[in-house]
Length: 296
Image 1: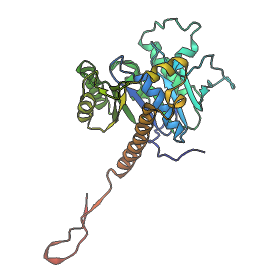
Image 2 (image 1 turned 135 degrees about the vertical axis):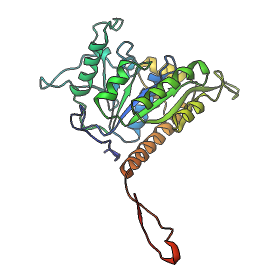
Image 3 (image 1 turned 90 degrees about the vertical axis):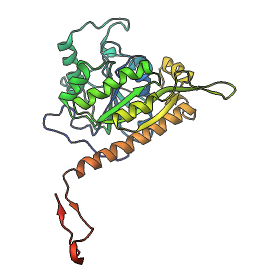
Image 4 (image 1 turned 180 degrees about the vertical axis):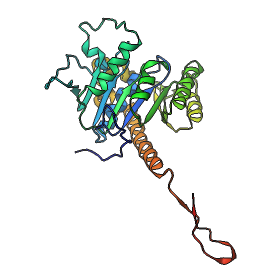
């Protein structure tokens, strides 16, 4: 069974018309834990009852296969489409599945990268999905531009850490979204704080960065994730912490962020569907006449 969710507008020629929502997880900055967030948010959304897929669009540094403990080569059952690999009920695709050696480097120029992304969208049998989460590489280059041109995305989730050395680049990612008309659905502040064994909270990377990015993006701060060694430990073992330790504080925080994100998506669709609708002025007319004129 799947929980119902509203759908984006599917334009003619959309490469994934059976996918209701496309969420880009991006940062514009490396090292902020974007792939960890993408993986655990995907897992949290799936555990909430939605049909979810995860596309690793970081062609040069794919990490989803490691974080989800998946290896193997995708196959085609009909000679036309590629079957995504699956674990924990999540469909996934990554360039990492295509490499003979996990240490092999992908040395491609833009056109080859563009072609790979088109195949990962149009040639993969994603089936009926409520959400396709796309883990973008750092920066504001070819991948994000290709996706914005190829399909109508629901919106982006921006991942940052609190310190200015991260937010300075993340601001650029938000600016790019505005330029290419990708809605920013919300901001996730990763590694916000650390709780030591005595229960004392330490803000190792400062504070306020996530809120500053959210204000610049005019989007909600979806949540603040603690710096928790379990996230790294379970990722190295090939299981997202949300699946491995669902009762932990960090997993509960991921769950709360996922729930809020789904709410924002629904509100986004509701707002879009009401654009251009007539507004009824219920204040009444002059001279006591209770008119209900339509304001266009």
